[in-house]
Amino acid sequence: MWICRNCGKENPDTAKTCTACGEKSVLPPKGAQPKRRAANAPAEGTPFVARALEAAAWGILALGLMGIFVGLFAAIPWKGAVLLVLAVTAGSWALLAKGVAQAVRDAHAIRARLEREE
Ligand SMILES: [Zn+2]
Image 1 (tube, helix red, strand yellow):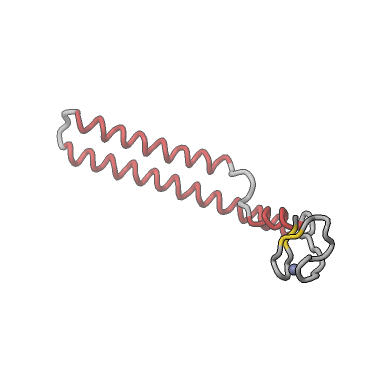
Image 2 (tube, rainbow, N blue to C red):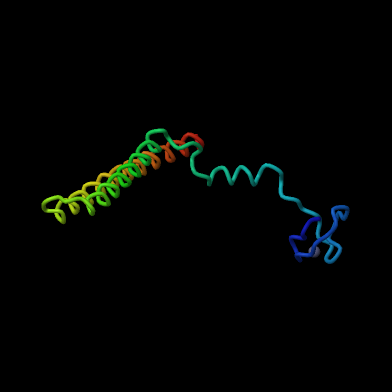
């Protein structure tokens, strides 16, 4: 089955020309599409540093949340302030780690694209 590029009618594979308008059967050249897709796809393989930093960011966030959760039920002086500092610290470290991870990934993607174009 192929679809006429001229009128859009579906034609059987055996037909050399469109049964409706006579347009020649034109199949997209093999290999053209996958190549274009590969160029648009993100660089294959995320650098280990980026993945490690991302994991660290989630770890920090989880630890921070756990600390806040535990702190809610623990008797600590200045509880509000301690929990706030904990949240802000964990949040900013996690954001920092995520930001660096993103920067590493971007740099990697740009380098991979440049290498492919050369
Ligand atoms: Zn046609």
